Length: 120
Image (cartoon, rainbow, N blue to C red; front, side, top):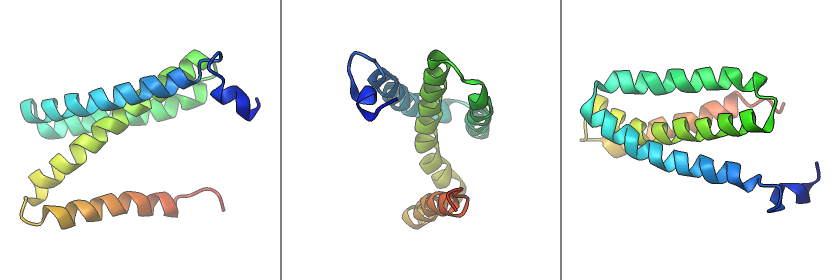
């Protein structure tokens, strides 16, 4: 596949990104609402398990439709994480030093990505 095929509007690949962004945004709103209404740890655990299950299934996503659905589902879980992590940080560590605590949690995410990088 050439580089120009990915941006060709007739191919429709841009729709995968569009739907991933839509589901990312909607999951942020839904996760925040559910975090306030339901048991907090169960919502966080559910999103972790759904994302882990989806990532394990990515090996089997061999058709474009399955790959697109897996990508959209990843966007859904990723958006939920970005809504739940600040809320969980405020609940577990309090709001007194929220900026520092959430900053350290957010930095840890980047450091793990650097440490577990497979491009060596």
